[in-house]
Amino acid sequence: MIDLQSAAAIVFLISLLSFFLIKRAQFTIQKIFGPVLYFGMYKTKLGLKSMDGLAKKFPRTIKVAGYIGVVLGFAGMILIAYSLIDSFLKLLFVESAVSQVALVLPFKVKGGFYVPFLYWIISIFVIATIHEFAHGVVARRYAIKIKSSGFAFLGAIVPIIPAAFVEPDEKQLAKKPKLQQMSVYAAGPMANIVLGIVCALLLFALATPVATGVVDYDGVVIKDYTPGNHTYPAEKYNLPIGDKIIGIDDYNIVSVNNFTDVLLRHAPGDQITVITHKASFDVTLDAHPENNSKAYMGIFLEQGSKIKDSFANLFGKWTGKFILWFLGLLYWLYLLNIGIGLFNLLPLGPIDGGRMLQQGLYAVMKKKLADSIWKYTGLFFLLLIIVNIAFAFIR
Image (cartoon, rainbow, N blue to C red; front, top):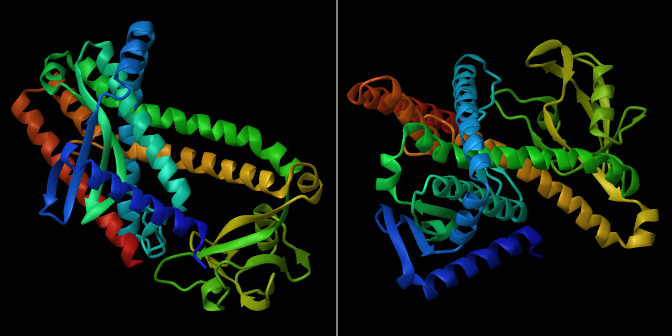
């Protein structure tokens, strides 16, 4: 029987393809690799009045926020650049290192960062909409014409990955002072990061009441094995992915923290009995790759839970499941907004960080030298991204 995530993915892809076929005359197609890989844009005027309204109603606030965004944007650029370089060096010199860069995908594949489809599609839609809307508001604050906004997608034979866009008048934008241009570029990533922080705060505020009133913790679920060249105990002793660990030796396991506390009582080389909801396994613990004195199993865990009977009797089991699903959505909105927002601040070619860097360089040096530094900086970070993604698939 097909699961909910797969059914949602099929319905979405069929709907996206149908929309494209019906409206194909209104789509602008940019070919990337012949007819196989392409980018489709459906131009509208959707949201333009709202951008104008906000720009006129809060001009001073938007101006100040835009300037703060430039400062924080360059700080974020330094942070993400350092993280990417650090990840690259660890991949070269630390055998157990795992790539910090991966493709965010709604299906499980080695080297990809898996996000369940419903969370993935909702998050992509929210991230793209907020990102582009922020660009548009700041552009209108500086009287830069927005030609169009709309819906877009990346296609590989058929439409696959949805996106949104705002199309400012590039000639008008280029004539504005450099600080104003950088404000426009920084607006999108900073809007994503702010939304990510808001989602994190909401998640933090709701987690405790939900944990106490809606669910009971009932173990930890094995999500995956730790990747790398070394085979760690969980994989070595064939602990099944998807099983729920409910005990270690004589200790009951109900939460991730509980699991960690029990493991800290052991040393590398100790033999333990891991009890899941289906079977038990004798496991000899390994040494932690970053601390040889600590015991290690080499698994990624997820908190297991069930709806409390008392809550289900009052409000229904599906109400509890929806609350848990919504908390999951907040988690992915937090994680992906911050991750994609920071990624967009990389000093790389045509993305927001790259365009910010280019204008910043123009402000302090001659154009020819600035363009040369900007070009080779972008190529350097593009190479780092490719290497990190390649390592994610290899290890």
